[in-house]
Structure formats: structure tokens, C-alpha cells
Image (tube, rainbow, N blue to C red):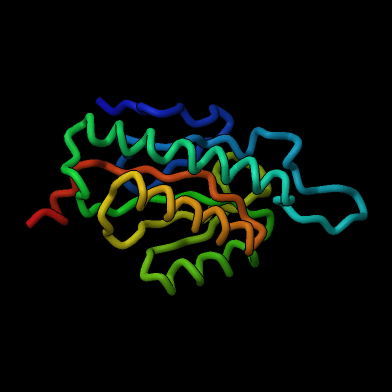
Length: 170
């Protein structure tokens, strides 16, 4: 049985990954927030304005320690080396592909494809390289992902993982 211990994803997001369901996720809110909708007739605008970025950064960095605590409660060893699965949204494939390129340069897997919810958004997802998971490292990593997303006019929508990754255990 799988349980989302932090927050349930929005029912309007029907992302169906090709990988098994992950045990822990952070908030998935993006596609349902009408005030973030990027399309205005006759105007070129960013998907993510500065205020939206600041709100998302505060929310995501506040949730990271909560998720680490839940992972520890589920049996994660202190500073366990884990891979994290991450999620971003973009209004254009070019922004999503540019972000995916930068994520791949960090050694992460990354792909950009249309969101499965039927919207015109693109979902950028993949896996990090393993790194020691603790409160400090996940908050720093989360902030880095929020800033990288904003740089590419994409929104970081959160991360998830499984606290037991046998392929990484020695």
C-alpha cells in the first residue's frame, strides 16, 4: 500500500509516470492555480512571475524538512544516499527542453513532455544522482531547483522518493 504522507497531488493533475508510484511526495499544485495561468491575449508574459516564484520558493523550502522527517519516520537511515524524483512545469517545450538540458548537465535524468492532464503545459521530470538526504541538503537542493526553474521560466512542483532504494545500498 502506498501513502502520500505530505500532501495529495491535485486531482486535476493526472500525471501517470512510467515508474512505480513513489511513497513520498511534496505538494503538486501548479496546474490548478488559475492566477498562474500564463496565457493572456496579445501579451508575451512569463509563466512564473517574481511573486509566484517567491511564494513557491517559500512553500517548497518549508515542506522539504517535513518530508525528510516523514522519510526518517519510515525508516530512512540518517544521511542515506538517495535519488530524488523531481517535477517542473513549463508553458513551452523550448523552456522545458532548456531546463532538461541543464538538469542533465548535473548528471540527472530528465525528460520534457506534454502534461498528461490535457493542459497545454509541459512536465519536466527525472531523477537526481544519489546524495545524502538530511534537512539542510534537501532545503538547499530544493532552493536550487526553484531558482533553476525560475531561470528557465518553469515552476518547480516538488519532489518525491522512496526511503529504501536497494540498488543504492552497499
